[in-house]
Length: 296
Image 1: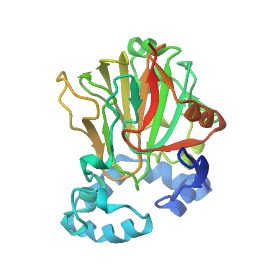
Image 2: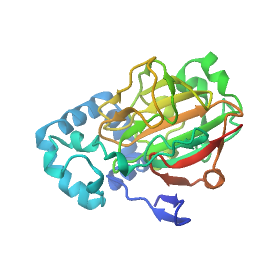
Image 3: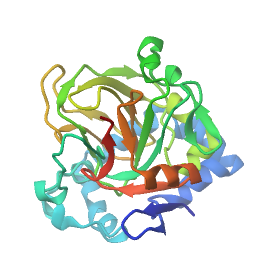
Image 4: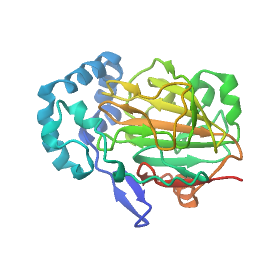
């Protein structure tokens, strides 16, 4: 059972996991682990499933998925019968009023919907993946000079479940730079998998880019793919000014992760998020929700 912290009710909730039995089998049983290494982590497996999710045939899965995970479709721009495929539904856009954004330049907002953890004063060689397992930023982005900028800074990890809104956004106005692609595997990013695969974020397919934020110094964006994620789509234009809340991109089908790194003395994460992160719990957040403040 995976528990996440609800910031509004100040209580813990059990997470509803899409494909829970499959994930538990593939990452916890001896046979399942072999299947993961031989098949599930491979690009071909995710590419084939992603291709299926782009077909009209896959649209038949939408109603049962919505019902099983109690997804509020009143927030969606499209109605259920207007989606051409499961990926069309999965990457759905929301009405602008569905996710209000605090425009205060000193407020840090969540870049998307998901489960969030955050760590201050990070050691670049021992960044927490999940309690007890770490990785290095140099390994994650394969660029030591860029990584060194974030020594003793802040790391924010946003894990998106298949049931979440799957578009991610800019947390401030500023200039985004080009995205760098790093090839890798396609392990699940569910906590069950994170406990089973050391340095998983450094193993998976990922993309990273620098964002020259107007109010939070230079921010490092990293998007990590996962099992059955057909693509990481960057919808922004490099070197073109963006506004706070503008879309950066989206993930096609599957759970995925967005990681942000902030320079030292640039932001202060909200205390409840830091407290829960130290305890090993993720906080459930929505895009646009306040998660920190600028250090002035």
